[in-house]
Image (cartoon, rainbow, N blue to C red):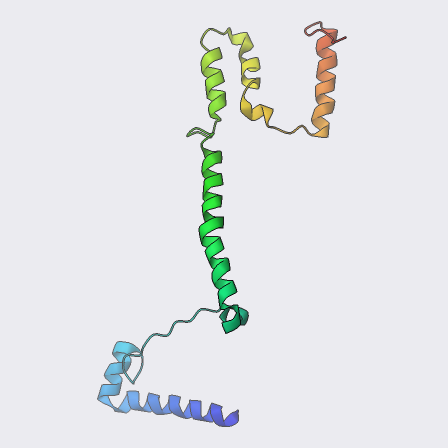
Length: 151
């Protein structure tokens, strides 16, 4: 280990000396950052060893093809089918249709009811605290005789 380190240091010192004394090596250092001249670029990808083993090549290829041919197109198709339901402003098209039909001749006092018809509100889950608040509101509306209590 010390021998390898000493050899590496000797090579570095030797190249530094060449870069200072030899005009060609100095020019190479200025142009390419190395006294030996232009060096080929090395690229490598850090992959786990099991992916590179000969006996796993078929498995890796099959998994890659499944991902490329099945998974990615499926994700794109699901995204597209879900995004078709929404307009440019992320409002469900179903809500736009309801609003367009009901807002033409509706008095302003009924606007909150129309907004409550939107498809987005129907898909919202109720939390336990929401149910308590809604029960209080229902009792209050029944007491004021704004809604009829179901028998």
